[in-house]
Length: 199
Image (cartoon, rainbow, N blue to C red; front, side, top):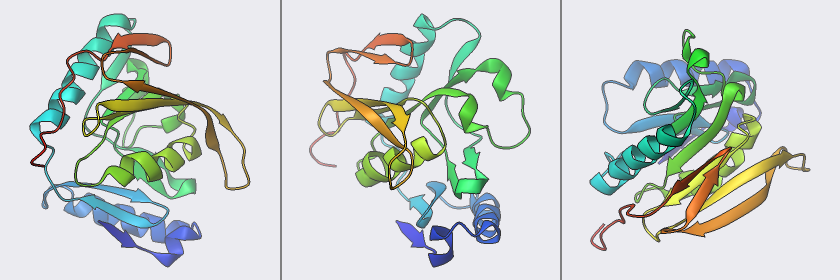
């Protein structure tokens, strides 16, 4: 669900700060996850289901097995924020140097190596559409999407300028079972769970 704000589309910094303050005030009191995009506040109301969380766990462990010790695959808080762009996101996995986590408040997105998202069954457009637009705006160099609905995904790289703003120029699609390269590290996608048909 998106709570729209006309002013957010025009990048009014005071409107963004008001939305951020609102999100931070309710984040621990209401279920789901809150993020801020150009359209306003996004509220993913459903708690993540087992296949989502198991995918996040397996991706984090596989990445950390092949990355150098000083690089981590972080899950959870805090958010990554681009106040000038009016965007605050919380990737399922954030690949970054451990030293860059030593900050107060939100992470600086430009310090990341990659953002990894596992598509939500309840709101797939948040991962496939708006984050595909927002992450290049935040200058996150690599965006990897894993979709347990279909057993497929994509890795997006090479930010370039377009009339609509920065966008990823390169997209490499994959199917579960193939190896996938995220930034400098290649991992297996074997045995990643799928959503049951009942969802």
